Length: 193
Image 1 (tube, one colour):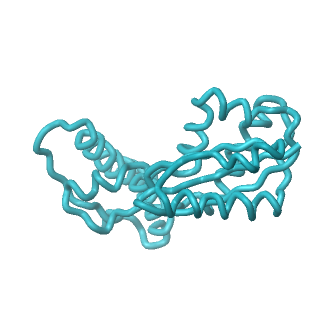
Image 2 (tube, rainbow, N blue to C red; image 1 turned 180 degrees about the vertical axis):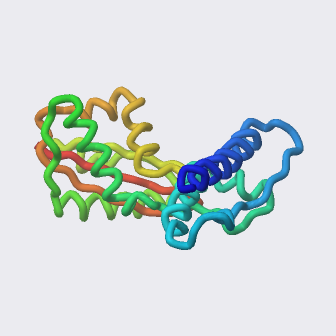
């Protein structure tokens, strides 16, 4: 019984994902509607099903949902918090490469937050030269709000200069700032020796 319900739920989620993927690919005049948790899901499993559906929704750009006429499918960070998710992604990446995790740095948190807010207010991405001239490292990224923690860190991993900062064995602490503007998230991650 539980296996059958799980199978139906997975099938429903796959339908959402496949339909959305077809829309992203520009495959013509496809239409779809937002899907709620299927009625066959037992009440005690609804919270878990809603979390899975939220993750599927968050993985797809808001433009997809707008294109199919749904206004209720907006980005939700279900990872326990974007900040915590980014920290976990970065530290996990460092550990996987034989490096230590980065300790929190409240001073850099404050400076990174101020810089992220400055970037969001101007809808631009530029480095904080004053910070870099003091010998700190800095990673900046701006993306649509559909891009969660893993997505944002993956953007840094794919950029050679940013990846060097992520894997610098001499960095011991880091600070982060997150701000929103112009339909985007702006993340600043500062590193210290």
